[in-house]
Image (cartoon, rainbow, N blue to C red; front, side, top):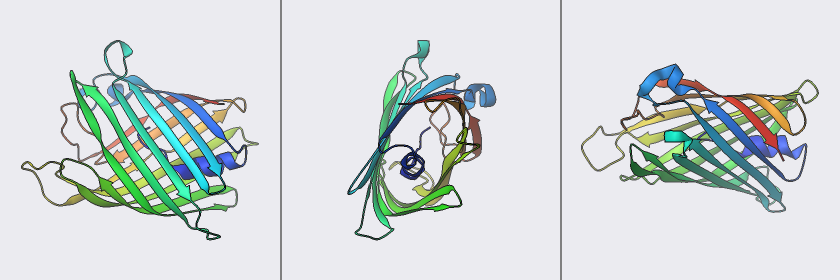
Length: 242
């Protein structure tokens, strides 16, 4: 849930409405799957998404709230907001994006480092499958700033008379191995994150399904250390389209 991209929503929504927003609730059983190493408990995540096109392009935003603290209190809030700008009649658009957030762990607060992204984007439809991609410069505002490149691809399609929706994204970006000015490894590594979603649409408003987070070099351990290994974290989810 830590990553949504504009193209999937742009292309899926464009066939239904000019303006769209939805609320999702995910049950994340990562503690049951991986133990205390990456999470001390299973928890719920609420996601609110909104997409709005206009004559200059489109705006997309989402907010994730993780209810991962004691008694189900909110422990993490993460925000992404992006804008695609039309470039005349060109099929290529300009993509600008901001990511950031705050959280609480073991009774101390922390910030999720801001990221600023800019570059070209492109989307198309191939036999009913909506595809999008962008390649951007990414400024990661860690304690030790990381200047990086990110490539994203997205997909989305509706099947069986719109009863099933398949969507998702794949991100691949570079990042400093050492994000502070202290001692640590030098150089960069690649981070992979993909989150395919599968939805059964009970009605045009109500859907049930799952989001499967597959990542490598992305997750931090509960002690704050970086885990350089792959993880798969599926959710059980419900979605309401307003």
